[in-house]
Amino acid sequence: MTRHERRGAVAILVIIALLIAVTCATRCYRPAVAPADIDSVLLFESEVDSSTVKVIKPAPKTHKDKRSKPAKKRSKPSRSPKPSPRRMDPVPQF
Image (cartoon, rainbow, N blue to C red):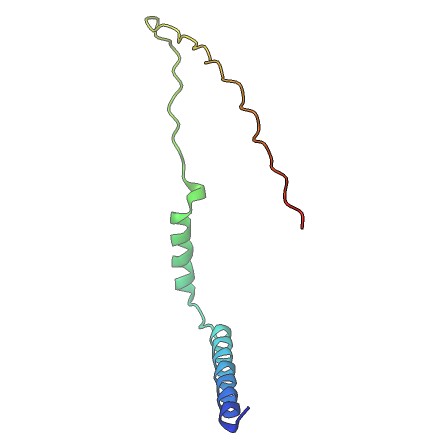
């Protein structure tokens, strides 16, 4: 490698190292959350939690309509026989 290529490679490695250090530092630093914020967050989460949604089921019908006729059973259409599998040509051997 020439002197300029080495300097460029070192410069790129330094930039990558600085980016990694900055991301680690920003992830480690977390501002303290005020207690009032915690309460509002918990209240919001409890309101939007889908597992606590109550579903109102309709009351089951107790009487049957005597005028309605029972549903007729449909006969299944006959299936055509399965087609025979395709003929497999042998793979050429070299």
